[in-house]
Amino acid sequence: MGAAIELRADFEGAGLRRLARKTKNANQSRRLLALAEIYDGGSRSDAARIGGVGLQIVRDWVLRFNARGPDGLIDGKAPGQRAKLNDIQRQALMAIVESGPTPSIHGVVRWRLSDLAQWLHAEFAVSLDETTVSREIRKLGYVKLTARPRHHAQDTEALEAFKKGASQPSWRKCA
Image 1 (cartoon, helix red, strand yellow):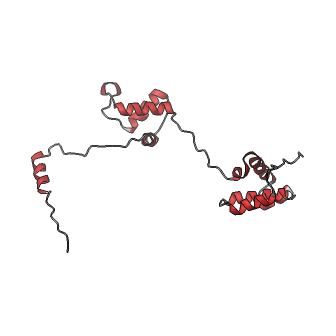
Image 2 (cartoon, helix red, strand yellow; image 1 turned 135 degrees about the vertical axis):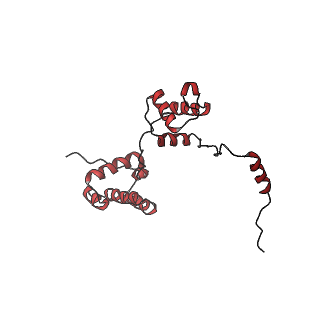
Image 3 (cartoon, helix red, strand yellow; image 1 turned 180 degrees about the horizontal axis):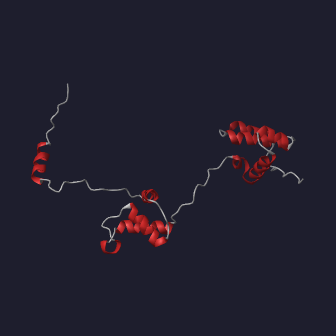
């Protein structure tokens, strides 16, 4: 069995207990109390019992504490899945959205999410679904704009007459 990894010399048990009382993070507090037990001469088994974990986990805590101090005992955020588009691909996507489609080249008169997904696959061999393309476009600062629908037989003169008549409100303020 190998020798135990030594703890940093710039802390002591009482100092770790004070930090454990001050912290708002329950997991960090539990880990600090377990390491304080080791500083005070307790065994690693006692520290594992205090922390509610096994000896291997206590060893990992010691390594993290030695490397980064008390902040190393705070749970970090998981990195998540790697982005499917890199910065160059995002810039190309922004450029193609800005310039708009050319009907003779792209075969469409306006970009749909499915068209952009196909373009990304053709240009960069990146397969994205429409939801992911939409998310990437929103990250770039674009929003979906659609024209208000208009009936093909709409009478513009009747519409203007209606707008002029609608300028006077048909309701009154109650007293």
